[in-house]
Length: 252
Image (tube, rainbow, N blue to C red):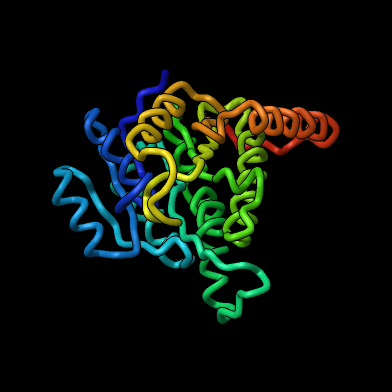
């Protein structure tokens, strides 16, 4: 089991992000959370003394770069990065007439955001040489697309594939990659239905601590889903055997 002492959670002002952040904070970890709303972050910090906050929109490259610079400066020992920031637009493809920038925000938050932030922070996490973890929060929609949230599902599926390659590229280093695959959770992101937030967060932290490569819960931990993910991993491993994945350098 890995103990994490310096933690960054994107999208941590409420819901799953805040639930995970508070669990590490209660253990004595130093925790920074991000969000787009200064008011929401201030409210979270008031409820949870010691929680550090940074206003940052993960859809914006400049905000990601500023956040990474801040973390490298104030938390050089970062050992847990949770890529949780999310937005979900519930609209069918045939009915979606929103201006393109509105749709682009969803893709940028869910895919460009974590990929870019990993690029900025993974080298720093490797530099300190201690065990560390990157958590990519995907979704059950990454396995079976949700017709009511097509761009969300497609972006999460892309993040799922990215997480597999990132994990392979970090083989032989102290940095692990965990994919957290929530089912519908009662957070308000897409309504108030779904698994209880506290039960999900407890299971998620246990899976992250155990270093399980994929952590599901309820429907996303059922045999049909895990068999599909296991089969995909086996095919990927065969592909990686033919086309080796370049690895990150290990700190010396």
